[in-house]
Image (tube, rainbow, N blue to C red; front, top):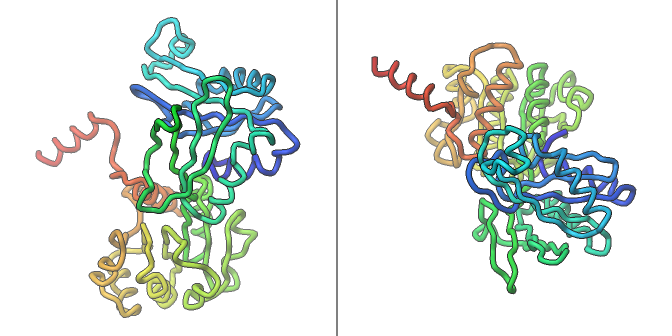
Amino acid sequence: MANQLQALLELWHEHKNSRNWVLGTVYKTAGPCYRKAGAMMLFDDLGRHYGLLSGGCLEADIQRHAQQVLNAKQSKILCYDGSDEDDFSFQLGIGCGGTVHILLQPILEENDYLQLVQLRDHLLERRPCHYLQKIPQTGETLAQISSLKTADFHSRARLLRLDGGDWLQTPIAPAPHVLILGAGVDARPMAQLFRTQGWKVSLCDPRPANARAAYFPGCDCYPLHPDGLSTRLDLQQVDAAIVMGHNLELDAAALRALYLQPLQYLGLLGPLSRRDRVLKLAGLTLEQLNTALPTPLRAPVGLDLGGELPESIALATCAELHAVLHGAEGRSLSPDTEQKINADELA
């Protein structure tokens, strides 16, 4: 199951009245930590936990404290200091050396389920918002939602001083919506990999043998021509699109349908020579398309990871798309690797 908050909330909502629950939230960190402020996970009274607040090393101990929160029906604050030899996290030998502060809150009818029902509604309606949680002093379990305009939307969680108390303000955005135009055999691993990220996935293909719901579990399938897609799907709500119909006319129609849409990412499968043919059939130039889009057309699609099978192409595309959506460069995190690459380029 995906660790995206939206997926966690769907699971919780399905069982919110048949189990007792605790919400765990990282509200402050110092030094290197696996998760940052705003990260959330859920615990239930069956001893299960969903999501991660660390790399998986602290969750069993957090679960123990979550059970205490369930029994007392009061919030609790935890601190794991990886630099303190006497601290539990240091004794585990994690080695990160950072400090993480965690808030555990019981999810109860009397505290309005911490407004998680309203938060879920925001995500289902694809409305960004800020989620506010009070850092309790005496067992308080307050939480509230503040719906703000995009201009006021902060990309990182932050602690605020409000009404004499400390509040964690976490920006919450709906899961990215990815549209795949072309639902052949090679689209199956692509859609599956996107779904494991917790992304919403839609597919469009007019050919009877393609875009069958049985081939794409958890996805929305539209068995129609790209020219008619806007009558069934609000393209303004699509964050990214991959054009991979393996048909010049269909791919050209897909580019026409996506032209002028506010996409964060648009990829076209195939080599540069094919890209130019598709653009010509679409009646578009590369300059026109790139001027209209927030980011340039990716064609060929994906990062250079090697491999030519559908699974490899899916991985390369997912990696590139993930980097774009998170504002990352998609480069190696190892400084030694980067230095060697630069040295080889200069040689």
